[in-house]
Image (tube, rainbow, N blue to C red; front, side, top):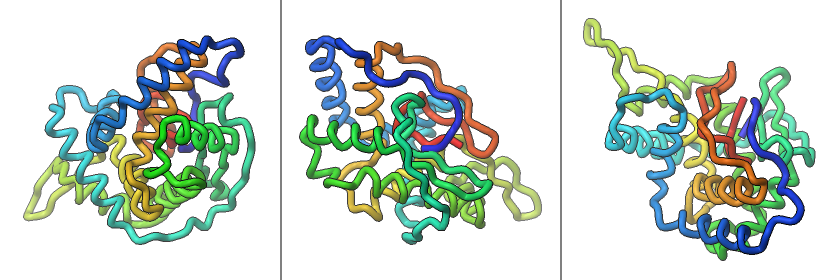
Length: 237
């Protein structure tokens, strides 16, 4: 949920009710998928795992989620700045390191909360949980950026690239940190489903209402691995 370029924008005026109803139906149907599937899609969308089977990606997704869910709850130390420009940029929040700052986009938080009501998902995402989950998510990225957690995540994924003298070198898995952050947010906020589900649903609705075609994944930024296709709940740096 942090910064780089994004596609899309604010919903256009005059969107037909039929189009909106179809988008809501498509978003609601996403709940039929399990949370691990959204992890697989996120990893696949980075474009950096060519030739990897769905089984391999699912294994990484599950391992990353388990790692994130097991992290202790630690409030972030970055300052929080709120603004209402999220829909224009396709972001819910972003974390920057100099100085450590979390920018929270209140317009997308509000839109996500309305979507939860529209979809009847309040049992999974209680009132106020979108903001709470976004901050918990960013706290993980802050923690992994400044501590040994990133190396620990690589070991948890088990993507061994080299073994020498009984020691193993574990490779980077693009997108795994994002999955871990979502799983952590779900665990510490007591959510019934992963925020990845809400991310996908919100992306579906905003893409339809903005008239923006679904597209290829965007590259990540200099401080984070590549991310899935643009979504107001995605994290970018």
